[in-house]
Length: 254
Ligand code: FES
Image 1 (cartoon, rainbow, N blue to C red):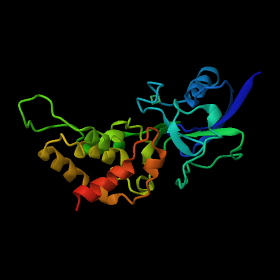
Image 2 (cartoon, rainbow, N blue to C red):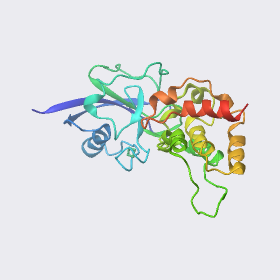
Image 3 (cartoon, rainbow, N blue to C red):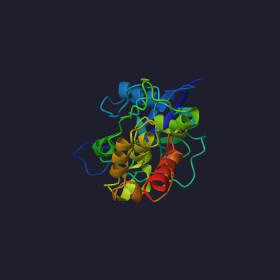
């Protein structure tokens, strides 16, 4: 039996002011991902359809898209699960422009770019601010040597307290945060979570810790978070940036 799935896809050229949404129908099979459907469209209907990907294994963080109004990784999201998966509660409304002839929510999978970033073309967004803010927190390691051993020991509990932060793949999906929507200076959940991955690491030197705390305590850093916790709910890797921001605020900014 041949099964097909309808898609409604955001299209916009760099010089175009308004997007146009284009419809495609793709033959699908169980286990097929949204990314594979985009490849099919590119190969069979329109080679100019533009999107990012690299690893196809939910590791590189390149393929973040908004799928049926929920930001997700295209390579990790299976077509057959899009309509049946329960969406996280209290997500902000994401609006990318007017859809002519309306979106048939039951039968069409809607594909749009990531929210709160400038759109370059079709599904590709400009992540320059995201990386600039990431660099701002200077997320790298420096430790104090306390003994003659080359190792710097950490207990399993100490490692566990920052473990979820290590899984961040910097996909930018957490920029769904309503603060990113209204404040282009906000460092954002990913950079702040990455900062806490180092601040909260017991092996970090005191100097390095105080430098990173200083970088995130600026007006548009931790103090700008409004505690929506949308970032916790949308992260495809189970990272809890909102919780990390809360921890920095409570433990280091008092
Ligand atoms: S292609 Fe690398 S995370 Fe999806």
